[in-house]
Image (cartoon, rainbow, N blue to C red):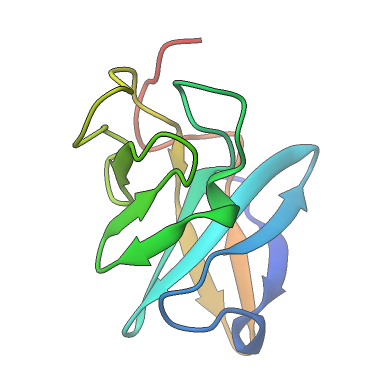
Length: 110
């Protein structure tokens, strides 16, 4: 695995997505308690940044049409989206969050 720095831990507030680009990949970083998630920052239904949506627990919602995605798996949990979104491994290294954008945890449709 090839982890790269995404942001500082302090940059990510609980329940509020944080938009960042890691090695050319746009991500939404989300904190749920002490857990951090990295999801590709684009709804699979429309070209809308997920980082502009709302978060509730392990779900992120696209603000335009209301599709929600599981931050752990990238799977949509509500329509109109039916294709998953890539999710990536995250590590905490001191004060930094590292993400491996080369090895997604799932295999979303391209």
